[in-house]
Length: 88
Image (cartoon, rainbow, N blue to C red):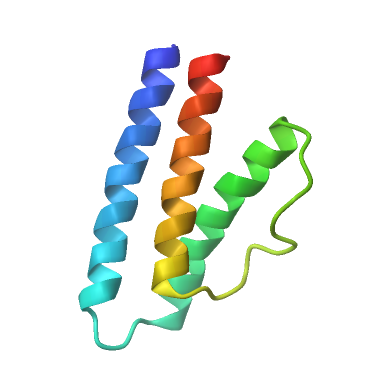
């Protein structure tokens, strides 16, 4: 089952990269679309922090970040989840 979860997060990372690439090439990003994507990214971070009993980095899932911040958050979240799964 661990392998399935690793594959899921690798696929998730691939999909996030596609979304971020489209954001970078779009002249004006729809704010609702960006907020929904950020809600997903931030929620991933919050859930892992809860599982690890860490203080939450984000107080809300509905906030706007720059595309660069989204990219960093996506990469860090994926890395952290993969480490957690591999070590569990």
